[in-house]
Image 1: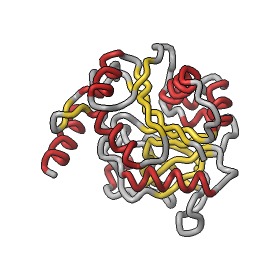
Image 2: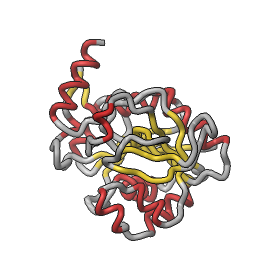
Image 3: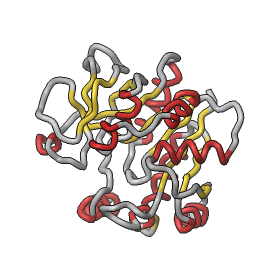
Amino acid sequence: MKTLVIIPSRLSATRLPGKPLLKINGLSIISHVFKRAEKANIGEVIVAAEDKEIAEDVKMNGGNAILTSKKPKTGTDRIYEALKILDRKNIDLIMNIQGDEPEIDIEDIKKLYNNMKNNKKTRIGTLAAKISDIKMYENQNIVKVKTKESFEQNQFPLADNFFRNIEKKENIFHHIGIYCYEVETLKNFVSFNQSKNELDNKLEQLRALDNNIDINVAQANSSPIGIDTKEDYLAIKKIIEYK
């Protein structure tokens, strides 16, 4: 299956402005993510950047980037705009990797891709990991997903719902912000208005569920640290530089 990997990125993150260009071991966060995505070797990798500084940084570090407008309201909308700009033919799957997880597991990227490839009826796939710390349930920055079945029952179960905070329950996992879309499903997704549920919770994946688009979930090996705050950045910087 022909797959395109697109990493949406912008400088104007509210909690940590300029985040994509913060350096770890002399390399920007966005370029760390790009290089990980390339190592997964599932398809061409492109950064969809809102700002020319990001595109220039990625290119300077040997990557491929294009500029999108400032119109997209979410990462998925930016992915679709990039797809239209690129005008690639015969693409079957679009992989959307978050630009703020420089430690994302390469094997997890491959696992999601293989699940999508082997489950032809799946329209959107994503990843989730076991919750290791009880504090994660109440942390608004850590998104949780409830699956309809356990991973023991089904290796690629359907998502039941997504939350920012929730009590500890059965089949609740740490949602990892990586998505793989069938191209037609991506087109459908962006054709819908943002749902109230999506806006209230600031979770774009709820737009899919609110419009009866199923999302399947594969189990990741580990939970990468998403960089939302300065504390997150300093923590992951320390981890990577120690390695």
